[in-house]
Image 1 (cartoon, rainbow, N blue to C red):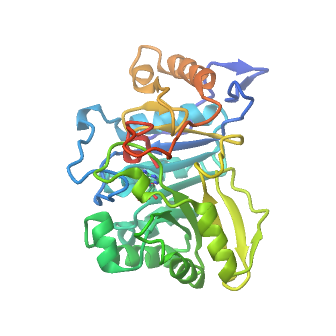
Image 2: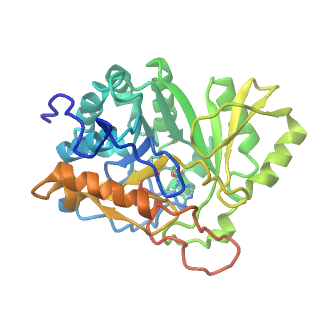
Length: 348
Ligand code: SAM
């Protein structure tokens, strides 16, 4: 990949500066979640069907285009980029993008990070650390190998645990994300949290969201986290934490484990007020809201005659259409998904 050096700010200028991204609700956008592939080596039952239809490869942006796109966002004041997917580490030569973007950390980028299922992390942890990545989010829903296989339809827990260990050994700060699933990992959550905290990793629990069709009824998967929080508070001393990440989680310190617990509750507590993020798919479609269908085509802008100008215009448009909040519903059996895109396509 010929990434070149950081480019000059784009053409939209306010007082000599690139105009920051501010939406119609005066939320300043500083965080980009950039999906580099919608493909994944797992098939988690709440995320996608076993026979998933993936985006045609020819429609996916090249690594050079992904870098150019990231540059367009950085020029408009985005300071944090999370590489995601699908599973980002299954994309060929993806480390080249980490290296290229990593060169900008400390200049116009504050943080480069990724979300991964960790199956390939033992191979890449050192490279990520060298590229300047300091923290990784790793998805782990269970520590039970048979349950992991049922849930992800792949027998990959040993690989994942090796990947988590490799990240720690490489000096990466690990945060574990677990989707709370009724009747699946419900009983195990305290054990998962205790294990993670003992390993020095914070944990965030996430309510399942109605994104894309899966084989199971969403309502059967849904475990409201307010109830989980109450159960955990009977076992441990949970103190609301003032830790803020700019993300949607509310945090608690657990006195007995010495670790931090985050709760992401799109259903039992709307989190959109402080939304500072945008998501871009691997084909360059910008979705200003995970739970909405509004989108802007950045690939067309990138491939136009005047990519910088068209990209800047497309980002302005995204600021106009970013909705105030998501409209997930999780109260009716048999509903179509709120959003037909799977999380693996939009970028988790
Ligand atoms: N492959 C990477 C990983 O596993 O972390 C990144 C992409 S994955 C789509 C990002 C996160 O989305 C994972 O933590 C996954 O568990 C979560 N996820 C997928 N579908 C979801 C859904 N319908 N509701 C809530 N979380 C979901």
